Amino acid sequence: MRDGEQTPGVSLTPKDKLEIARKLDELGVDAIEAGFAAATEGEFEAVKLIAREGLKAEIFSFARANKKDIDAVVDSDADAVFLVVPSSEIHIRHKLGKKHEDILELAEDCIQYAKDHGLKVEFGAEDATRSEEQFLKELIRVSVNAGADTVTPCDTVGVLTPEKAYAFYSDLAKSFPGVAFGVHCHDDFGMAVANSIAALRAGAKEVHTTINGIGERAGNAALEEVVVALELLYGVKVPLKMNLLYETSVLVSKLTGVPVQPNKAIVGENAFAHESGIHTHAILNNPMTYEPIPPNLVGRTRRLVVGKHAGSKGIKAVLNEMGIFPNEEQLKEIFAKVKMLGDKGKKVTDSDLVSIAEAVMNLPRCRPLKLQELTVVTGNRVTPTASVKLKVRGKVISAAATGVGPVDAAINAIRNAVQTIEPIKLDGYYVKSISGGTDAIVEVVVHLSKGDITTTAWGAHEDIVMASVEAMLNGINNILSRGNANISPLQENLPDKLV
Ligand code: MN
Image (cartoon, rainbow, N blue to C red):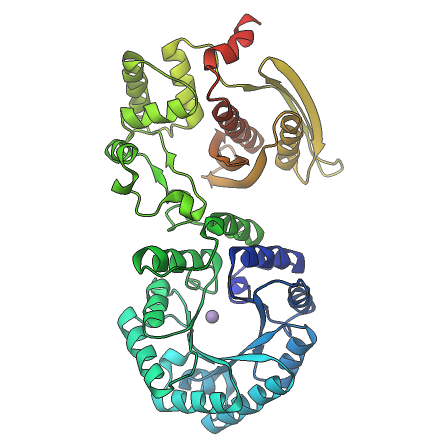
């Protein structure tokens, strides 16, 4: 939460940081770098809040090599300090304007000072991977003699390769037997995860990561990628609650406002989504065919996407999951219509599929929840307010709510209404694409859950409020129909047809 928060444009409040720290602790990490205590009052507050929370993880604060920074760490009640001193020629000369001897002295003094004040010390050599070897080793020797508990030579600008990382850490292990080294990799060349793992293989004892790989520039090694690779590709038993990886990712993305790219490993929206007919067919026979990571291991669920690449088996599986059971003939026709829509360049959502199935199978509309009325009022002198009237399985429910804006108010009103029948949670909300012009189509994606059932739903509309409402209703409908999969959709909807 120090390097990760150095992501451009990100700024977390102490309360946000505490929420993330609690989640990281629940996930089971050994150490949390809570912030940079000397940076601002808020940062100090955050480190202190987290340090006093009584978490199992060790709480670190970042500090530069000066007494003022270290004093702030001591006052914050953190257990440990990540004390960083530049070690490369370019950083020493152009950042600090100091000489090599000054750096050695500074490191020694500051480590001793921190130790004298009861802190555990992790010593970080900044830009270590571009440092002159003899000087870096001298600096490590001085820091170990001064009492550093761990030494982390940082790949500050991400210039290691897996081969170099392995050689670099093997050499350090040989030169400093008994010293615990950490690894801190940046992702400028997209190799942070591979480099971190190579360093661990060469004997590093600790790995620095961030959730979703956030951080300065191209970010840091992503925690979820490092641990899943260790567990599944290297056979290392990682003592984390892996099934919390996804919700941790969602929380960090929500609080930092940094979206996760859809094709991101482990936590990306599409990481466990399948559309291609051939893939879907094989997966339904045996998941191992195209799913190297079992989705439930990391707290995900498989998502079969209906689109022009989908096959009839995949479409059938999606429909069955919703409690809709077409016969062979009907399935063929549904399949053809989905392909046609896809070829027109339209995104086929779950609710489009249901509408097609309803038409083909001549079903009464089998979406349990329908919007009857929505009113939203907004402006600069009124509190954004929404009222909504929904029909759920023939019963009309209404609710109203306020919000920070029209979208928030509308979604709150729907949540209030639905809360009276089902405890459905909104886990994520993303505005996916706004392309050109104020009248362009807006796409909204929501993640909803009810206990173990999770769903992702889309809404698309020229009006962002309507797109959001559509996404919410689609998601709630997905959950309601899944929760009642044992009830025949026909029986379920009979009253609706009679009305
Ligand atoms: Mn860094």
